[in-house]
Image 1 (tube, rainbow, N blue to C red):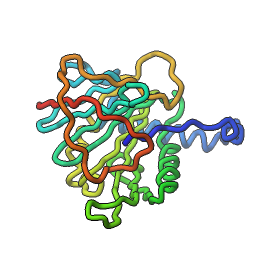
Image 2: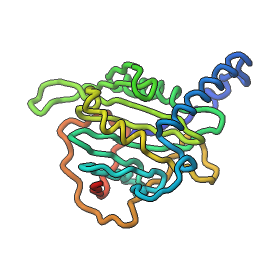
Image 3: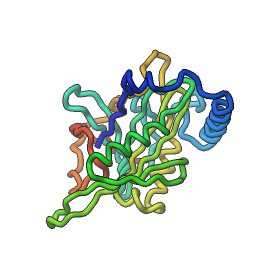
Image 4: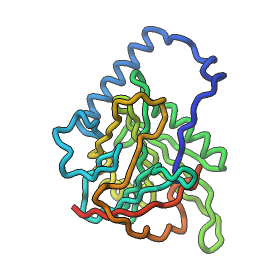
Length: 246
């Protein structure tokens, strides 16, 4: 389940005011500075904020800290054959990760939460905004048929962090989507992620490039769950699975 980030139309951009009032702009800047200070202390981190890359699983745009029992699945887009997401499987729950280029002067998470709500609503689902470990989060529920033919729903919890010229989004699925205790190990790993934005100019919302670790040997992916943990906008094929034990 991969959620793309839509771009604003020219009409939408034209409708926006050229400048925000100075008082609002000053308050927003102070809030963003405070959030960035907190992020630098607790993670996720920018590559400029760590002293060494040794010991991490190198996936290109993301460095992942290994953990006992952790499995990584790279998700490949069928049309382009590019890696579009990495999913961390741990203790029966999952955390899908995607990193995007972002503007230098502002974050993306506020706007993206609104887009996720619109997408889920268009599919007959509901979203609830909550305050969690990473600030504002979304709980999304979408109608889904159960294995016995009854009608139920699937749940996903969206978390997001704005960094320096990047945005990192996570989608918690399985028990971790609803149970804070079950989510804690994956949340801890999310905080230890390091994002490598690179210096090349990129349009905001472009995916940062992921890749298979150089020293990894592909193994078959596990069977797909009967009920996906999150609604789907596009259906990438699962790529090779990489198992890392640390």
